[in-house]
Length: 275
Image (cartoon, rainbow, N blue to C red; front, side, top):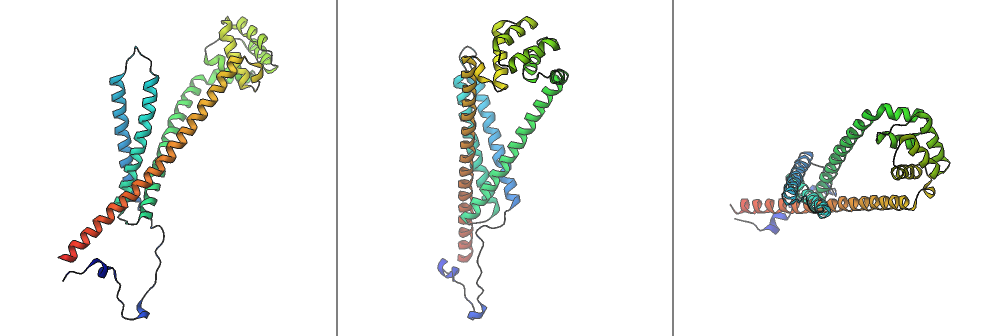
């Protein structure tokens, strides 16, 4: 005889002494196999969507038009891909865990997001470290020479632009910059290297800003520096918002995955009782 779901949920004991009162923890133990499965699924989805975006962008690219719209579209697609991948990763992690409570789904979605974020951060740091390492290996002798002459701000800029200047002239330019003598520094730099005065002025302005003397730089250089700082700040805030939204999406995917596991369990139990 089939029993109802309400009867199935009742607990019968022989006596009150046989009843054991236990309190389930708010979150169950993390199922790391399910977490790894969610991370693999999320990373794979993001990779596929990224490749799709690259292929679409290259197909629609026009070398005769401006690329500003393409850059904005690429950034937007990267954000959408990250959110979709976060949802898929959280859903798979929660569904594969076999746990049925919403709290467990939230936990597994959050942990899957955290592991994925750490993975991408490690990859980005490794790529950036390799790039910087290659640059410094290529520029090592000239950077060391500039440092030994006591002219690191201007020296690094000059060496990076392959400008030839002797140590005495380089030290003289550095002294003018440290003293805030912009015109003298431009004149010395232009005479020592044969550089165009406009290009020399741009290098000196950058060195003045790096040296902590932005008031001695030209108004155009200060405006450009402020614009660069504002753009960097806006980019940082946009990245923070995207990562935080990805966390919320991953937790939502975990809740949906736990709900799907719960429905599957109840359907199977009802069919077994009816049989």
